[in-house]
Image (tube, rainbow, N blue to C red; front, side, top):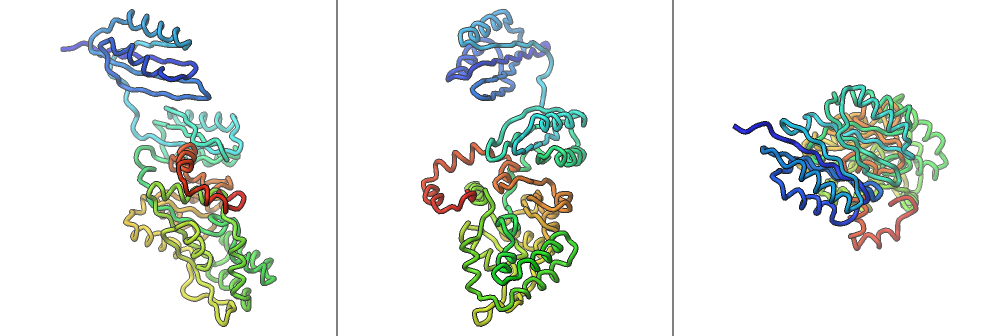
Length: 411
């Protein structure tokens, strides 16, 4: 029967350069050891490399220490060697991803989040950066925490810190997401489509007042929509094309959609607005699914009525479910994004509900919220880094041509 297993942790730090990892493992290969775990990170050109090794036989610790120390000195690096015994440690089950975004991200925010994680009896196993522009995003890998309790505490803290925090299960959860469905007005588009049309009819103030009440949940959405559409009666239908010519996508919208589609996601929109706008978005962005209300047109004029049933709050959830069924994706693998009260049902039904620059009631109901005006920040919640996005864009020969027609801020 063999004796207790010996474990050895070698931590090498210093200026990064080619060949460090190869030289360390070449030195270690001369001894009767097996590799249990390896972690390496480079921060601003400084390398931290940790190697956990194990052996059933007692290794020549003096020789290992001498050789590794000599190697570190030759490379101008520091080394720490820690000896232990017993079974190698295993990662704690129930791991979480805690994503923190800020513009700017202040040390006080990181301190508060880290302190709250510790207060919940959890451990931070790893921290890494997902993005440095246009927002700073770092992610904590956490073990030993209750997801619901930690999410509640961090959501409350995020308001005071002026930062966004998301708590999600680790493992395969995020990698399983396959369908993203978004609201349109004030989410995929910067503006409210009906307000743009109302401005052409000289009724913007009246429409905006009704819109605000509906988005707060103070008015029944369908009734509010009919009231607003009635104010457009007599408007020349050609105005729709004029409005579309000046429509502004939310910053990061194109980056979000093209990145998701590269990864095999299906993308859709469901809107309490109008098909005249979602048809344009479908063609412009290559969307897979779209559903919205349709403005009735007769003799080249808006009649002030809708053609067909209203897409309201329950209708948005039904559309999400139908899109998922058509894509062959279970609801647990869907993401819903919205900002208003009529998005609540689809946000609640989706596997991941995201409140984007949303009203308080929507933020409270969603799994997580984003308050930055960059739609591509959604990628970070899915574990996709900005470096990965930029690298993929750099290899896309068609993107340069597309970029020439972008309006400012629409990347």
